[in-house]
Length: 511
Image (cartoon, rainbow, N blue to C red; front, side, top):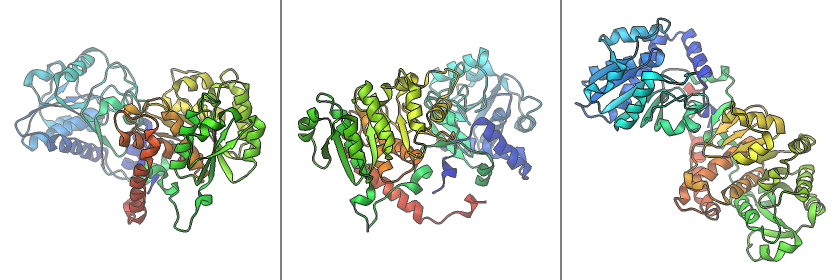
């Protein structure tokens, strides 16, 4: 498996990939032609002959792709009209040539609906859009969205910022998107993800080796990114090879969240899991546990004693733990223990009044793997709000500030590292947003850390598994369902990893 396939290209990185490819001898007109053919292929695949097609062309290279697609579709027997508000800009030389090759006058953009199209190709603006769409273009996009036409977007739905997923003014609602070489962050980030429909990546002849010259920091969260590091059980292994995770329980009336996390850790593959329980909660925890072990924990000193056994190599604390000084003291002991540490929920909120104390505690032990798992509210309490930052950049800034991996949760969960590397997930179903779901996620992260995964890989894999478990459980899931469907998801993942590891490497991926 190769993380090259998971790379996401910002508009600037994609422009550089184009430039390097052109400098290596592939003319820009050839790249544009291949892009236009790829768009035409997707349109033609599900469009009966006789269907009217309108191609909306902007003034730049995205419009050039549209002119090529229009010509190819016309040559295949479709009735095609091009609508544009202006001819291609002179500096977009390849687009000018593509418009000339189309060979017909474009109708005014506002008249796009005159031919009563069944399909609209959106080639107005690509991923590099840097301004809000207004005026006649905004009116046309709004009208297309209301029309019921099948919309196929070139590169990205017009109006979506390819770097951030933000909608700039108004954005097209595409049923399908054809992008080139690699996806862009805006295809995965909200709200842009809602506008792209099914995203197809077309090969236009850019070599994968170009990625090595682009300093890629953004990746799609999928098994190609972290699969080589995923711990599958060995035939000669036993439970002690797979680590011993400790999950810290809350008090008598606040025990369920920790049990959800503990079960998540066990299902994720940790060889042993111990629930460290305050004395007053021992009985209630004991009544619910079987495979998970139970241990009395008398405050911070009790946790320190538990983690003094170095075989206990990962600890999760925070779910329903309380937000006072006692929790801050438990976090300090966990960080000092040497165990990989996952801090979730109350473990984060406990430091809302003094985030610097948490960050200093993490940095005091620079060799400790630490993962923070805030939802949006907890994130703002710890790191503040900067509306000018896109989600990946906000998570990057937070990870650098804390000196830890940060999982910024949501429908487009981002995992960020202090060095700026991020993964973006797009597989979480909406019904995963339910009480206790985040506790299970924290447990899955802990279970993977216990098995020796590095923080970025463990956090990214856990987020992906969590999303897949939500898909498998289906509508109506409750948090207790997630650990129970993990074996099915893990079995599927193991099959995929085995196939990938046995596959013959394509030499084209390495040149």
